[in-house]
Length: 125
Image (tube, rainbow, N blue to C red; front, side, top):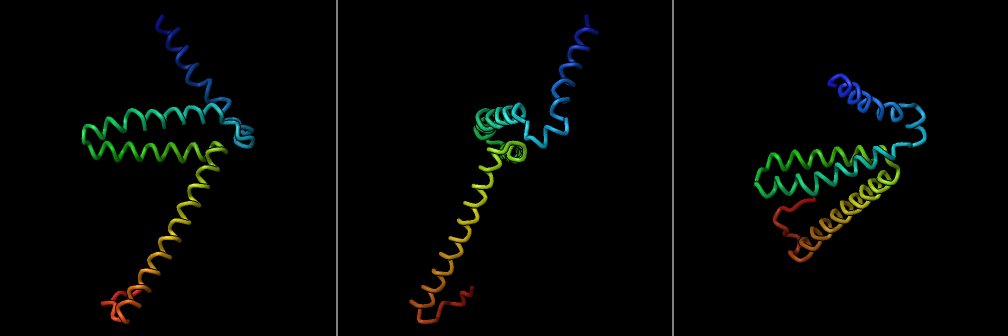
């Protein structure tokens, strides 16, 4: 009975890895099952594990969970074209936000210099 169970477990562990490791899977983007699994894992960490870590006040656990969510998110974006497009869009938005923040900072420095008559107290760009 134990050997049947062991063989079934071994077959279960090896079977899903065979189609995903084929060379055509990467070329065609055929990772639909892995995309769903990664999405489920991300949902689990965000919905169950992270709130538990926050409610217990365990900062290292919370940081480790956030790091794991980020790793899973990037893995999913690498494998799944739809999520890769989402990552690209978010990176562009972050870049635009950085540019806007630089513009606001430059405007603030210019306003400080203008309204203080050039005596901005040593604030340099």
